[in-house]
Length: 465
Image (cartoon, rainbow, N blue to C red):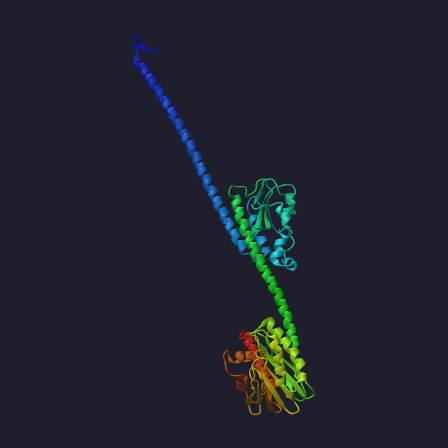
């Protein structure tokens, strides 16, 4: 039943309509206000999500940029010590990372460095946060192929991976380092908090990337270290060999008679293929040899040493220089490999007859300088280099000298240094440009002085004797 308000005792239907309209209007305003409040709440929620998304984007970008810088830094490290320090200093700046250690397996170090001697020479100082070398099988018990994140560190695990800090670790991450499908070690990040820095959605991907790049950086450093250690050992051997080669050379010689022999010997590198020797045969005669072995380094120095012993054995048995050279040639034709050869001059100086007999095997011709006349006489008997033809024939030249004359033997490195590479002249051109009348010792001193200047300027391109 609808009840109407009455006016003057009569029902008024319009009043009821107005009342209903007013009630509907109030309900509409209420709903509108509720909808606006809901929209405002949704807008605040969306704004918050947008802000959080922006902050998360900034955080992820900053984290990726941090990893890029970190990878760049450890790829520029020259030593394992520097790499570990870089990792430690950079990673411990991140909130939630308090300890950093790096472990490498014994098997990997042995295969990378080649020997325990090289491993011992890694020179890692005490106190550096690097793990003791671990056995590969032991490490496999704790890590797999992917990074392992521990929100709660297993009992005993921290003792293995964080020695010295195991009682402080609450959570940690283990990053297996693999190279060519082989486990070579692990990078370990520890935290004193229960939640680890990388306990985020992108954490595992970043750790995978970090571990892959770190394994390559470690391998590059150890490969370079192995080459450096090998080079150091080789340099030590070269220095020892150079001392031995120097010991094989004779000391300055005086006698018999007025004969004096001095020499200048300067290999381009520590070991050279130039060689000289002289050997008294009796109270009047001295045998002399100067040689240039093809090539440089160990092989040339070894051949030069063999040549010395061959010369010392043959010279006392033969009366003339061409016979000495022939026997040397026969022996070294059996020893030298293809493309190896020796140029040399052999002379027998007779201080009683004041004469020199000489044979030459493809070597620059020596010459006799007469200070009284300021003239030179080139001595150039024919003969091929040693080691090329077992049946080679060597000629002999013989000339007399006067007291005060100077006989100069030299290798082609001397003419290249003093006259320039490609010069067709001989050392006599240099001597004739000196002031006339110089003694043998004065000529020797001037040539030495000039060669030392060239050496200091880096101009020696070959061994010089």
